[in-house]
Structure formats: C-alpha cells, structure tokens
Image (tube, rainbow, N blue to C red; front, side, top):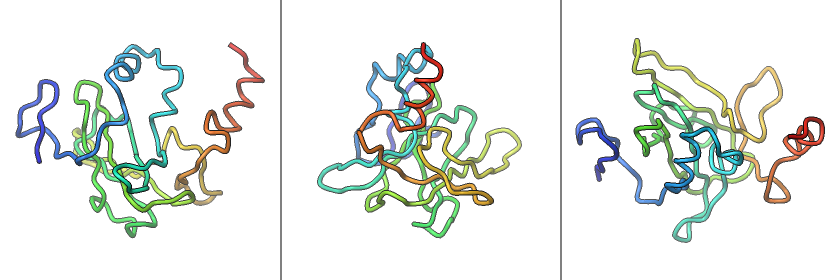
Length: 161
C-alpha cells in the first residue's frame, strides 16, 4: 500500500505499514517547533501492543535519508530486512513496528543518505540503554516507572530548568 504524505509524489512516497503513527499532529507541530520537551516518549524504541501484537515501535528523525532500516540480533543485522517508512516527509520522521521484539533486543539504524548514496549504521540517539564498549548497539529498554529513565531523572536533578 503506497500512501502520499505532505508534498511528495506517489513515486517518492514510502510504503507504509498498516499501523497508526505513534506521533499525533500536535506532536509533529511541537517537534517541528523544537518545543516538544518530552519527545523521548515518542522517538526511539518503545514497546507497544498494536491489534493484539506486542512488539517495538521505532521512530527516528533522519531528514536527509533516502532509506532507513532497523538492523539487529532479530534479523541477522541485515540492511533492508526491516525497513522503516518515511511517515512525515516535511520533518523527515521515519517509523516502523516490529512485532515479537522484547526488552533487551539489540538494534541499530542503517541509514542510506540521499547525498553520495552512502550507508552508515548508527545507534539510537533516543535510546535508553546501550551495549558496553567495544560494542555499539542500542537495546530496547522499558523504563521501570513508565516515564523518564533514571539517567534523565538524574540529569534533571543536577541541571534543573
């Protein structure tokens, strides 16, 4: 199923999964303004149940990407095996839902640039947990209190607004 968003033509628009976006129009507005102070609740990897299937929703901001996929221990680290879908073209937000993933799953983003056509593997900038060095993968992690993870709470105490 191909769906057109924003001002891109059908040829340029991405194929989408049949799941609702985790981002509301208001979330996108605040994100675009740089005023969504809890964007970490939406971006990154989050455990969700959709239509009775439990899995992980991945959301990434990559405005200059031609394609993005999630790679990890669940798909043999194969680029393109789990593609993300450019859902919000004006902002460059990519999303996908991977059913069956659980807390502790390892992942990175494989991002192909629209400039010079190169691909890099990147950890999640909104990730709540990572592997210990020398490894660099992010880990799916559920905060125990359902809100801001411990490190962010600790930072808030050290650097109050």
